[in-house]
Amino acid sequence: MEKYAVEVWENCLKVIKDNINHQVFKTWFLPIKPLKVKDNVLTIQVPSQFFYEWLEEHYVALLKKTIKKELGNDGRLEYSIIMDNSESDPEPYAINVPTGERKATSNLPVSMPIDLNRGNSKEIPNPFIIPGLKKIKVNSQLIESYSFDNFVEGDCNRLARSAGFAVANNPGKTSFNPLLLYSHTGLGKTHLTHAIGLQVKNNFPEKTVLYVTTDQFFNQFVDSVKNNNQNDFIHFYQMIDVLIIDDIHNLAGKEKTQDVFFHIFNHLHQKSNQIVLTSDKPPVEMKGIEARLLSRFKWGLSADLQVPDLETRIAILHKKLYNDGIEIPAEVVEYLAYSINTNVRELEGALISLLAQSSLNKKTITLELAKQMIDKFVKNTSREISIDYIQKVVCDYFNIPIEMIYTKTRKREIVQARQLSMYFSKKHTKASLASIGLHCGNKDHATVLHACRTVNNLIETDKHFRIFVEDLDKKIKL
Image 1 (cartoon, rainbow, N blue to C red):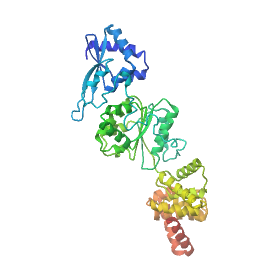
Image 2 (image 1 turned 180 degrees about the vertical axis):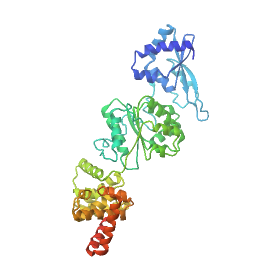
Image 3 (image 1 turned 90 degrees about the horizontal axis):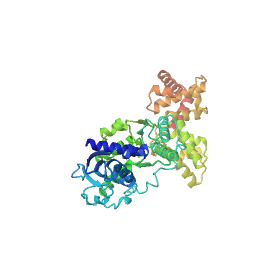
Image 4 (image 1 turned 135 degrees about the vertical axis):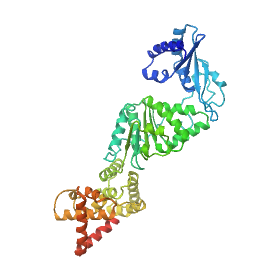
């Protein structure tokens, strides 16, 4: 860079800075590099074709005014545009274009990955309208029902939900950028990301929010390569204020797409635009993702969503029933929550199945109907017997509140229910003795061993006790 060119451009920037807002100045003028001044022509280098077109469309009058102020009435401006080349010759190259004469771009090499027939400066194609993305300008692809109001918070997802809410109320300004949410399938990642997007749109209507799956992003990139307009694709994504990408682990092995996303990520992060990602595993366990991308995923916060506990599962079912205006017996809701503890999606699927069977067969929803219909559903999904479920069956059998087995009372029937819960938990689950004790009133492993010995002794010596243990065992395995 010539020293005189730098001096001229710095004087121009002082004037430009006073005439536009700070964010616009940072985005569109700070990246420009002055190269030389020759014959009263200042040559400036801009990072892309799109960048040049944007300046010509929006700021050409301001640029000409400042150039003439510095170089006199004969002062002119010329752009040196950095271009992407073809796949066979990937090295970038620069072309020089005088201001106000954009038709000169029609003589560029045909290998340049950009639409060459753009006409005059008033006909810049809207970067929101490119193959595969035509609907996004009017629809951020967010599902209205996936709001924070419909998201049930519990110990299993409290950190993720709190971080998401903070991001939604101050996008790009918190330390949670990027926000990476990870969990196994069906535990609420997608719901939470949509809730973030909806909240941002509600709080900041002027911001552009976009939700896409990684597969959509990949397919759009492939289309842009086929249509020779990768620049439009990249610049579209670089203009998003809040970018939400679901299942980012699906980028594994897609090197070109990872490279493009790397540059988009850097641009958005540098502009303090919010990035929200989801994955089925934390960054440290992702395979096939470049190290430079993984390191950026760790810049913000990685929060997991775990399998919901019993109380949260019951709350989720009540919330769905309330939203749909449906009432079913509390015991049925509890039975569903106890029976299905794998993920929220299966839990809601079981509820829908029950409601459909009730409607089609014109039967009232009862616990008996739930057992008939849902047990088939559960068996089809290989239900795993949980300690919670065992406690529920045992307490229902003795007709005592489940909370009682967590207390320190020494009442005979409570002690017996607690011991049986421990016995069946050891028999039907893979939980450790310490874990069983923790679930049964915060007892230690020695208490669990004692309970198992007591139950075994009673089975051998008490015929009536043996009968209702066998009865309980059948109920638990139903």
